[in-house]
Picture (tube, rainbow, N blue to C red):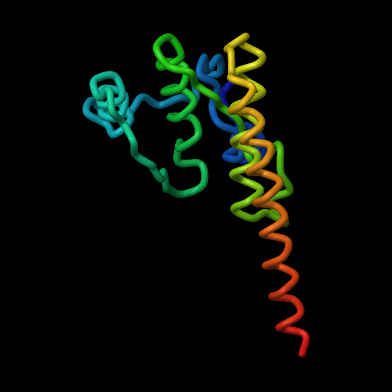
Length: 152
């Protein structure tokens, strides 16, 4: 894409809702400084054999969170089972709960494992299906109770 010549060109070139591709053919990616958090995270992931952490990435819209995570995933695929997906693409963002997120994560993990011919014990998949059914039922009961309580 040629350099923007006016505001309309610049506006149409900038799409903060889409991460910059890991290959970045347009040259929009701006490398982070040495010692940036993603490089530190990559080193930590490569060294630590007992990682049991949850990470939250925050920042302004268009600040590069998804782009950096996609680049990290690409770099780590050789050594790790990486599952990248967008919750926005598989769920209705206007009507989403933590249950939806957990179930979509489980579904993506199982689907990607099957796609890559990674053997999963039947018991594991059956437990996941049972858990998801119980979780959805429990969540629906809680939601129904809240609606009934609020309607009086």
